[in-house]
Image 1 (tube, rainbow, N blue to C red):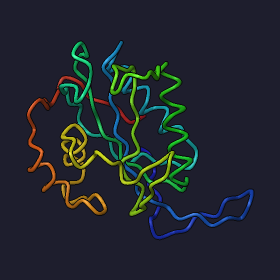
Image 2 (image 1 turned 90 degrees about the vertical axis):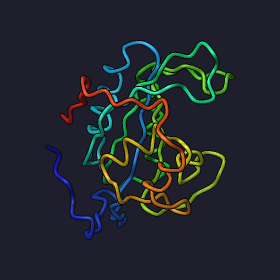
Image 3 (image 1 turned 60 degrees about the horizontal axis):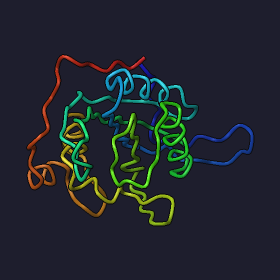
Length: 189
C-alpha cells in the first residue's frame, strides 16, 4: 500500500526550498479502445510512480456508454483515482497528458472521439482555475455519472467546489448506462 503523507505537513522541495502544500486530487480515467482494462491498470501504475504523488484510493471499474461521442464509439471502462500530491495543478495536468501519450492517445478534431486513454484532472484541493490549459474543477464532472459514481464509492461525502456534494450531483444525473464491473479489479502496486 502506498504511504499517505500527513495532509497537515508542508513539504519543502529539496532542490529549491520552495514550500508546497499537500493537496487531495481526483483523477478520472477512461478507455474505450484496445485493451481497456490493461490500459487503466497501466495508467494507475504510471500515476503511482510519479514523484510527489501518493495514490490513496482506486475505485471499482465501471463500464459506461459513451457520452456525446460519435455513434460508432464503443463502451468505456472508467475508474477514479484519489491521490495526495505536492505537484501544482498545472504539473499534475502535464503528468496526466504524459500518461495519455504513453498509452498512445490520439488527439483528433472529433469531439469525444474514441481513445485508448483519457485522464482528466477533476479537482485539486479546493483550487479553482479557468484558463486556456486547465479548468478546475473539471467543467463537466458534476454532470458525468461515470465520474461521480466511482468517486462516490471512494468518498461518499466528497464535494466538487462550487457544484456541491457528489452524492447530490449523482442523484441529479442518475446512473443510467453506468454498470459496475466486479470482475475487473484494479490493483494499487
